[in-house]
Length: 334
Image (tube, rainbow, N blue to C red; front, top):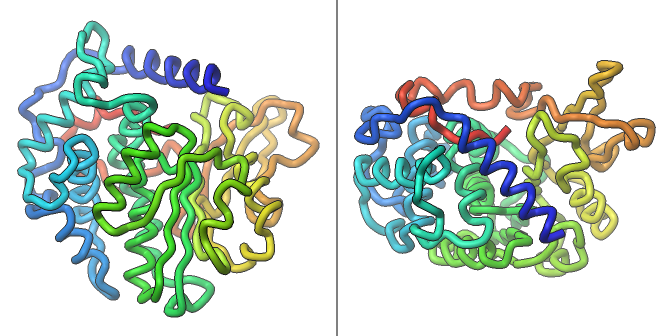
């Protein structure tokens, strides 16, 4: 499995290296100046956690870039960091995957899969859309004032666990139990330290495909589950562990998932030869139907914020807040 993960990361790195044409203006801010909210990340989290409070797209992107900075420079979450400082770091990080560069993630102290996870975070439009859909959810199917249990399976940088934290607090949840599960031990440790400092939750180094390794760490019915281990659109569903993670979770805790909200709520994949669509949802435990398991199906769309959205259209509300010369150099989730 370790060899497969390394090969996948190498492929992603090579794909990213050849994507940009030319070089960006490294003095350009990663957000339009009017879109940036000054102040510490911790203050933003506290403000955005208030029930009934606004959750503008500007708030979301400001939080994301500050979280990015705090992930690389631990402790900066407690201090005001300027947009110019964040932008300088952002360009330095993204430039590590451009053709001809000599910089490497190790130069920023990023080991293991940390660089790859941060590249997903740095796709600001898509990450912003996903974050907003989770943190800004207006209601849950159950009363959360008695408690909230959230899981982020394949947590990476932990940004969706932070979104679940905001969701819970904005909905007036009582006791919170938030757990991220991450296979890469280096990544799990770094993410766990950051989320722990912020009082968000815990991260367990474990294989999310083995729910027995984590399910007893949280108690009671599960309120929310995030699983964004979705392959790129040109990769088969079998190339990632999205369905295997859900299969194990349902096998271990089906009785605790009756009212659970999932991200994504629905994933739609396509078999290109027949142009047939297959739907993965809680009704089939997010499994590819048996008839299609021996053929190639590719992810195409998700239901997010109640709407079926193509993966290519995810994040469509956010580019207006990001300068054009920045957008063309952003890494891509899918």
